Length: 331
Image (cartoon, rainbow, N blue to C red):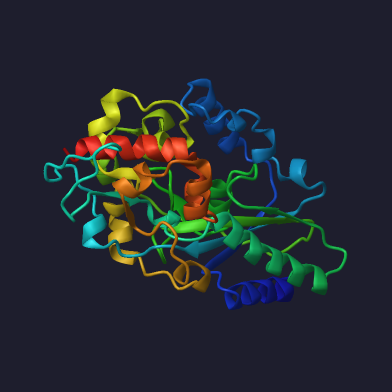
């Protein structure tokens, strides 16, 4: 299978995949223990879908007779315009839903880089379908199962085993080629392919991500409390955000890149994305005027503005909750 493995990788690169590696479809005992501890300690917050984690650590639960896990990574890094930079000390501005500002300079809410344009789930799923079709065209008996983030598999763990990078202290996958600004997708297959060697890497004594996190969500190296993470608070959390985090959120209204922005690997290796599906379409962008979000009166208006965007995940209620906090921080 060495030659076919090479053909799969070449085809993947030809359709826009930045990195690809292959790991054995083996039970991930270490990953299961970490996830079990995460859930037992309640650090997963409202993400109850993580509690049924058996399929995440056993690929055969998703695809019987699975032998290989193909992992792809897509670079999504982009420079953030100065107007969208994190700002916790904005000029005093009166901004409410009832009284929009008279001055032209309107405070903006910052959007995490991955949510700039199209929903990456759909973009990566399309790429994985092309790759799976190539596999089955050349090996008709092969069976495949596609995973993109929401599918139950410990993708960062399998990416590490597939040689794409190593998991850093902030729990992101850090690749030597692009840093941690990468999106992951997987194909579980019954094919016995040639496996890559796990990539060895370390954060050393660096604690910049831990030190920079405004809410101290990184409890210790590799230990994240999602209930304190700004990405979780602004996206997955459906309740009101605890007041203790309001000021710390600044003008972040969807996700957070802070722990990645301070990472030396990203400062040295982050490169502008090239995949057309991400470069050609702008929906949310890097930032949005807060008043625009607060002015949305109905779910239909929200859908018309953000259809096809990752921001749909937060729903209108969640995004406006976040915008109100950011608006208050701008006063």
